[in-house]
Image 1: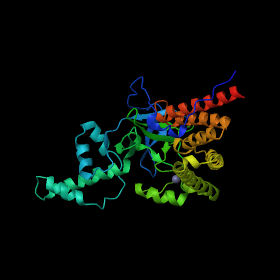
Image 2: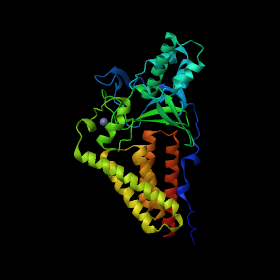
Image 3: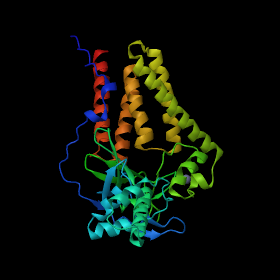
Image 4: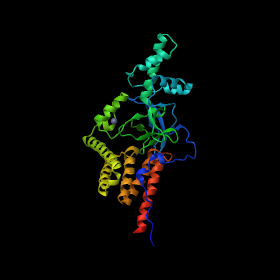
Length: 355
Ligand SMILES: [Zn+2]
């Protein structure tokens, strides 16, 4: 009996835009106040603290935005969006922290003056101050919201999630989910009662000096364990991870350009770099979608290509776990990881049948 060849799956074409996620129920908009409470912190304003043990993967926030604007919105648009909110939502907005400096771009003031029916008066000065305040809140608290097909970017204000302070070793993960139009926050690991819920505002792979520079945008000096006691070894590992990511993306763009000429040896080379980076990330405990999730997915694609199905299935299983933990089952990333796992298992069993 001859066993048919497995279907040729070109997984390089499996992109998130092809993944359809069907929702069975409305996810609602909620924050799990049974799991955390807001408290004043000594240095970072109000923070959110666990009031019970929270298991890894728990969805703690599933929040709708009060304001969502295109990336290029200016001070006038932000102010108008805030003023159009109902009383309660406006109250939530104005209560948020504002820590960035006033923008150096003052072109909007002219536009405001031209649109204003008021004379240049004290009222106008107050109006300018209100615009600046609204903008400062916006700049301090906005979250990036990518559209379903990833082609456009908006910025949204989610007042409850905005209370989360930053850590370069976060215990929660936030992401706007375009499928359900909510910002979700999940526990990245088991969190103990009393711990502050901390998310990362930035790419955590950067070494300490680079992170400090980027965090200046929010006007604070990070006091997390990685920043307060910078450990040379840890910094070295983060720098290595950053370099490996650069190497992987360079190899990938080279492959895309030379697809037909790309040899097994070159696929193996790429797989080696990915495997090295995966090891480092696992060691650092950076088990989230943007780091390990991305790499497992890339690793599966390469492993299948060069006939290492066992490795592919192992990594695909881990990718499913990570996307479920960080983003939940209603995310495209989770559904895509499951499709990847099915594909890898299919290729593996077809090979087993042939041998
Ligand atoms: Zn830090």
